[in-house]
Image 1 (cartoon, rainbow, N blue to C red):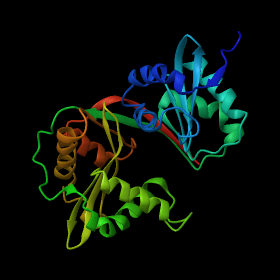
Image 2: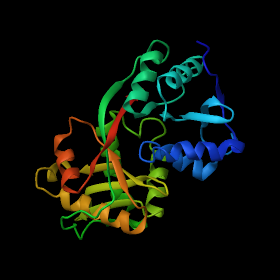
Image 3: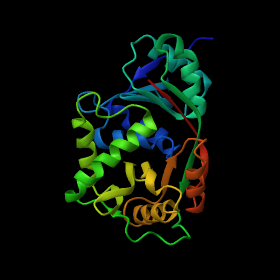
Image 4: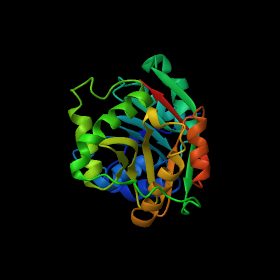
Length: 279
């Protein structure tokens, strides 16, 4: 069977790309945010969008930047994307997206791009469009500019715990601190601060017109097991729904039972399964 060729898409095909992204608004949120911000012109974007399908019928896309994310990609598209990606050296730090697409890519690319530092094959993708039926923590608030110094150590601790490497390793943390500051300026970072210490944090790491995706949820180890997570998350979800987007979404490691219980109590329901390959 002749394989449909993969091609890099440009601004002229933005409408077709956006239609594909709208078919899967939760799983495609990270790509949709980048396309909305920078379009598809290679000199503006921080990555490339590869397309699969005929020129008059785009079927699926794959984001290639700091991460690789296939969207609406069936088996033929995954095979074609893998062939195209495998012809290049790996430059991404992760492959993330719906589990079938990510694991299909990794099956084909592992010999070329491996080994992976970690493969997380089962990450429930959750979403809600309703305010939680639990009381929010009134002390959880969008972080203010003057609170960045308090937030940054907590953000570093969360990143190191979740990803397995420190964000300070590459450049002393300058780029990561800039990202944290950007989220604060956009009122997309939340925290509860007690005696100058952040004991809970979360951020709306991705925002599109369809959803706000929560990432970086963290509770100070000294405060874990006290039941503060549900009310804290309820505050984040309520504010995000009222102020930012019509739905809130996130993905979580399947083995993180405490976090999954918190999200269930806050009204999140399954909308699929993610997988992540970390390098």
